[in-house]
Length: 411
Image 1 (spheres, rainbow, N blue to C red):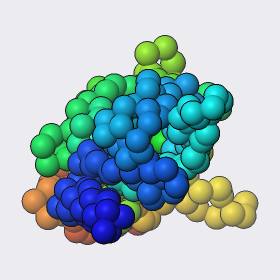
Image 2: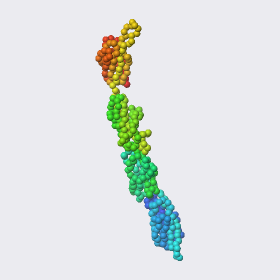
Image 3: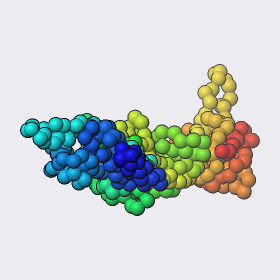
Image 4: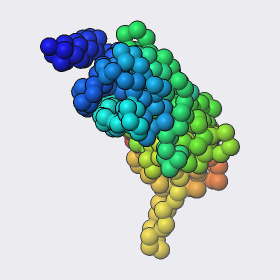
């Protein structure tokens, strides 16, 4: 009857411990071991890390617990007395013996063991998983070991060989949750640990994107002229250079590359094309260094106005054919010119025999240049839109003699 009562006590103690943890948290539980004359009951007590084991002396003589683990040795436990031990050291097997003195001298021992297992869980996550350089990320997680501090550790790309290093220590809330703000300066892995590192969460990796900024010396320029583009990358150690990319609405194309100087700065020269184009600075393979993500600056719209065009041609005299042939008339070196809309200058060099003056007529245009002799230049400048124009020499009958041509203006 007595044995059944003691066994009932043991079962009740273990059930109570299980009930405490049923809510999902590893609350500190208590297990009871009866030290009887025939041996411990149970002989092997399996508990979770952090639990308390109460050893109750059910013998009629004082008992002393001895173990290879010095913090597991007890003073003499009188009959009916108890000794309790919190197992929050290393996970594993703790063998022990309970000794008592014999009536005729010497001692006798009973042997048992306590097996400590890690049954708690610990999680960790990061938001976001890609951080902009200089900005914090939120690390949050949960644990079922409510009464024990949590150590947050990190391992950076540049210090991967040195292993994990401690960052901070936090305490979980009553619901087991915890949080911490971290500011990674390069790609960094984080994890949470408890119980002297015997419980660890899965690691979470946070990537870092550099901050890329860009400014231009001018957002409008004459087509064909250069502008200065100044880019900056932070941190400077994240890349060996910066790329200049351009887009006219059909994807991005690399149009320049420069090495980073002191402070992560770089200067590039960009020659503005006709029309509109967007520019941006970028760090990406092959210039971005390991541990950093690709990053780009905000695009900047550049407007290139058509450059003034100058069309040059000549008036010349054909060579005389035959001894008695009449002197040939002067003629243009070209009868057809093409140009884009915009400001256009036509320049006619007089290398002929007579005097000539340049004229241009067409949609909304009727202009004349000066009349010049041999060696002179007659020029006309006008804003021309799309269309077909006529250029000619307006002196005498030059036009009817063939000194004329077509000027085609189109994009």
